[in-house]
Length: 231
Image (cartoon, rainbow, N blue to C red; front, side, top):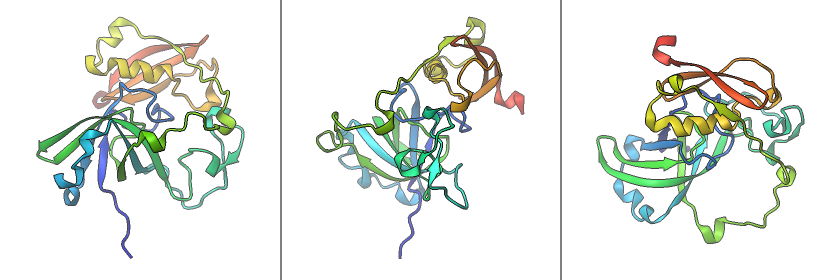
C-alpha cells in the first residue's frame, strides 16, 4: 500500500509556533510560498489552477506530533481551561496531526529554480510545514453561510490596540509591517494568559524577535531584536 508523503512545503515568516493565527484567512497580509518537493515539480499538475482564487491546503502539524492522543483538548478560545472533544475542535493535538487551511492564491510563478511556486496569502502555518495535498476551493460546494458553529457561535473575538513605537517599527522590513501589526492585534498569547498579565512575550516573525507586554487592552512593543543577534 502506498504511504502518503509531503508533496510540498510552505515558507512563511513564522519560525516558531507562537504567534501564528489560530485560523487561516483572517490576516490576508500574511504571505507564503508553496514550494513543491522535487518529484512533484511538474507544471502539468497545476494546469487549470490559475483560474481559482482560493485553495485548500492539507498539511501536518509537524511540531505537535504526539506518541499518544487524547479524546479531549482545551480550545484556546474557551480560555484554555474547558475541555471539548478533539473532533469538535481544530486543535493540533489529534490522532493524525493533519491541518486544513483555506488560503488565497495570489499567483503561480512557473520558472523558478525550484519549479513552479505558489504564492498564497492568509496561511496559518510555520515556515517549512509539510503539505500533503492541494485542492481548489469551490464556492458552490464549499460555502455554507447558514452553517452552525457549535460552541463558537456568538463568541466575540476581541483584539488588542497595538502601541508600536515608530523607532522600533522602523527597524522592521516595510513590506512586513502591516502583517506583523495584525498578528499582534489578534493577541498571540495562549488562551489561558489573556488579560493584563504584565508578562513579556516574544513573536518570531520575518527574522526578528518582537517582544511585547499587554496591559489595559493595549499591546506595547518593547524591543525588536534580529534573531541572528539573539542567538
